[in-house]
Image (tube, rainbow, N blue to C red; front, side, top):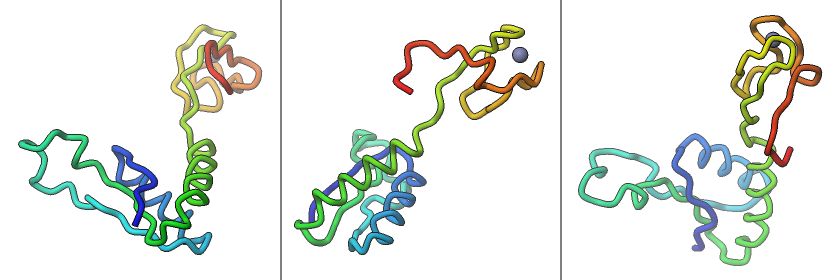
Amino acid sequence: MRKVHTAESIIEIAHLRNVLEQAGIACYVKNERLGGAVGEIPFVECWPELWVLRNGDALNARGLIDNARADAAPSPDWTCRHCGERLEGQFDACWRCSTPEEIAGATAGTDR
Ligand SMILES: [Zn+2]
């Protein structure tokens, strides 16, 4: 068994487990339940962890995880150039003036 990923969100871990299983990589989720354990233990130790059952799959799994996370990365916040409204990344058009992000988007300091 080899740990390939830790994330704060069980949703992210569950998604990545699907990705690996679809690629034929057997995996296991640790700390899937964030029950009453939180408190005495430093919180990061309670984060869900994704493990692969076969050590030989670890490298491949990490590659798949990197790809999957790049795809799922949340869009950065952006500011509408048309009306100046500040918008969260999940909006693909300005909710105020309906200008699409590809026209109105003026995101700065991102690598996308
Ligand atoms: Zn706007």
